[in-house]
Length: 381
Ligand code: CTP
Ligand code: MG
Image (cartoon, rainbow, N blue to C red; front, top):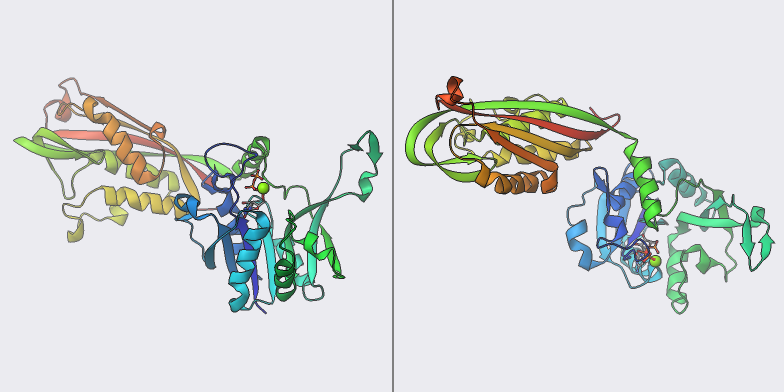
């Protein structure tokens, strides 16, 4: 029996404010929408995922991937329209059951998902509610809180029932889908969920969500060092931090000899406990001859993602007598931030000379030291 989930993510998040729609705000390594998707990805009873998006948000959802079949479809100007568009899209995929869930509820757990899907064997509609714990006053009167229920999502439905309800009820706009069953004689099964499955609506909800998600991550640090030989050659071009610069010395190396990137790569690999740069890009392999070191750094971005980790900050110290590094620092920060998909203020770059001492002082080599601090989900590695 085929079961799909519709995740509605086409809203603009007006109540939370800001420039980025709330479902795309990042918490730890990924957006709220991606946290939400992951609960359905690990759920064994969900076959396919449909996400109602606003095409204007393309820059925010374009990189979302899933190990399940995932469709992005255009939502509408209200939540109800977004759901209807997704249901219409699903019609020719013929699911028997459908769950409808708000993107803004990332704390849904797979036990509840399984429970709802199971109840749909014997019910046409399943609601998930939480109880009221506060005293409630309405126009000066107190209401018996024991009779109050707060509607959550996901809500589950027999597919053809909810499709018909949406087609027949387009005049009034409801804020959830169970509301559409109320006029009909459809028996709704109620499941009591918990309050942790709250909808991120305001900025303090976002702060609470950040605290809850962040506690699953731990901090790790890695260190990297690299050195390359240089030799006098006027009007050379060298690469440091992914930036090409003029130099009177050329770097002797198998790849482009970018010691900054090599040190940063080793720092990140160290923090991930995943070996070193030579393990992924052996100098013995001909294909890395003259290679742009940005390829090595892009690999780190990929490994971080695969391991549910993200960079807190990186810090680099370059040790070189020549060329002058300072004029290139901003461009290096920009380039490293770009490849690592972080912001420039997460990158520190400093340079020093070796006071004419040692091999660096004699202009026989340049070196870079780097530290990377990452946050990684507990249980990974
Ligand atoms: N939603 C949607 N299409 C819309 C409006 C809302 O898909 N036209 C989605 C939201 O993205 C959200 C869910 O419906 O995941 C619940 O809506 P709500 O919390 O109200 O989100 P927003 O409408 O984005 O927020 P606000 O009401 O504060 O603008
Ligand atoms: Mg809304």
